[in-house]
Amino acid sequence: MPLAGLFLALPALEATGLLACAKATFSALPDGFYGLETMLLDSVLRALAGEPRAEGATRIDPAALGRVLGLDRAPEVRTIRRKISHLAQTGKAGELLTALATHHLHSPGGDGEGGDLAAVLYVDGHVRAYQGGKKIGKVHSTRLKFPTPATEETWVSDAHGSPVLVVMAKPGTALTGELRALLPQLRTIIGDSRRVLVGFDRGGWSPALFKHMNEAGFDVLTWRKGSTADVPEDRFTEAAHVDAHGQTKTWNAADTAVDLPLATGEAFRMRQISRIVPVRGGQPGRSTSSPPTPGYRPVR
Image (cartoon, rainbow, N blue to C red; front, side, top):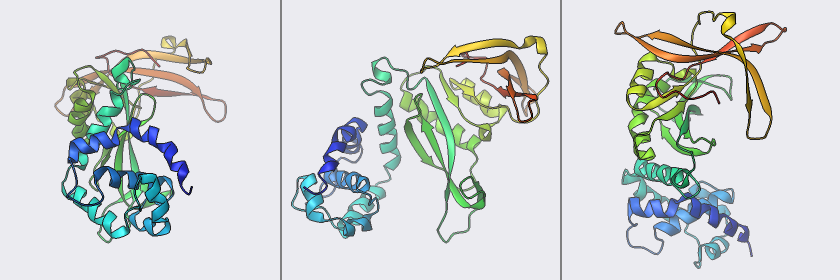
C-alpha cells in the first residue's frame, strides 16, 4: 500500500503529545468533514513524506494518504490553508508550544518519572534568512558567512539536547532580551520553584541579566566575554571526569570567583572555571566559563 510506512510514525507522534495538547488548546475546528486531529495528522504525515507545505498536497495521491488517515481521501490544498489559517487566527500558537514543552519535560521517562531533563536547559539563537519584502536589519548568517536580512529564532533544548521550545524573535532583538522575556515561560513549563541551570553562548553575556536570572531562580552557564584577568598558575589542578560513554576526560582547571560590575555601581559575583587548552602552534591558552556562585553545581 502506498505510504504505508507512515504508520511507523504514529507511536512517536503519540509520544510528543501533539494531538492531546492541541485538543486542550484549540478544543476543535468548526464543523466540517476534516476535524482538528485529522488536519494535524495530515500535516505531520505529509511533512514526513517530504511535502511540508500545503501546496505539496498536489504532489501526493490524496487517496493513498487518505487511507493512512482512515478516510476516503486526504484534504486538498484549499481546505488545508483554510483550516490552518483558522487555527493561526486564534492566536493560541504560543499556548500550544508551552503545552508541548510541558508535556515533553514531564512525560513518562522524562523529568516527571525521576529523569533530569529540566535540570539543565540550553538556549541558543538560530538565524533564518528573510525572503519577504519588508526592510529589516541584517544578521550575520553562519551558513552564508556574511550579513543578510534575517530573523532569529530562540531555541530551548533539554539536558539531552532534545528540542523543548522555539520562539520567534522580533527583528533586531538580542539574545539577552529574549532570555529575560523567556524566563516566566520557562518557569511555567518547569512547573515548580527548583533552580535550573540555563546554558547559552556569549551572545547572552550581560551581568545585569545574570543577576536577574539568579533572583528568578535560574543559574547561568556561559562563556566569558571580553578580557579576563590572569589566573595564578598555582590555582590550576588536574581534574578528571568519566563521561556517559565510559571515556575519561582530563584537563587542567582553576575554580575561582569574579565580580562583574553592574551599571548601578554594584558587582555580581560569579563562579569562574578556567582551563588550559592547547592551541595552534603548541602554546597553551585559557578558556573560561562562568556559572554563578548561587546554586553551586560541580563541573560537568
